[in-house]
Length: 43
Length: 240
Image (cartoon, rainbow over the protein chains, first blue to last red):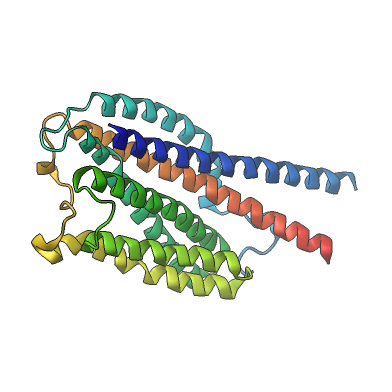
């Protein structure tokens, strides 16, 4: 049973961690892009 | 970089717009599928030969299919880039490679876990395992090349050729067990006869869930690649 838990646990942890990392960077770059767009309009 | 014109045009290709719009609905679909998947695996019958460890069947082959799909996307998108020189194909190629390497890595983890539980050892230089290791190295090298090379058309062209040349290994990997016959320890490719009663549904749900996990992660990664490209164009504009 431990092997099964390890296989599924590692799969979930790795995929969720990767997704979270991607989402975090997307949010940061989106905010940066919005700020740059606002600067262009304001400037 | 050729093919996208200006920074504002990066991320506006049909496939990138589709990816960006699909992220939220795919995420919700995946949440539902994960719940069904967990229920299906929990309630799946216990194999009379291998015992409960056989339930790794519902996660290991789907990871392999995800790896194959990622690498095929890398090869196909790379060839499309070579033909059209449109940068969105290159962004798709690198996204496919990264998500493919992720699934291949998971396959290389869950496979030995299953092997330890059934064969008593983590690794064997079995033909399937050896070719899978080679496939993993090939696309890890692709990722290393992309990370350490300066972005631009030359890098994209070299990567496209390399990524496409790795695809025949997928076909070899799939058929290598048949080629080596009884000399392979790894079980034969899954078909209908592989399943006992009650095992077909969890296997189907496992494949469906991991397929949509792949597609969702690919969409996220492709959208991120567009954002990164636009950010680098903005930075270049600020420095000039």
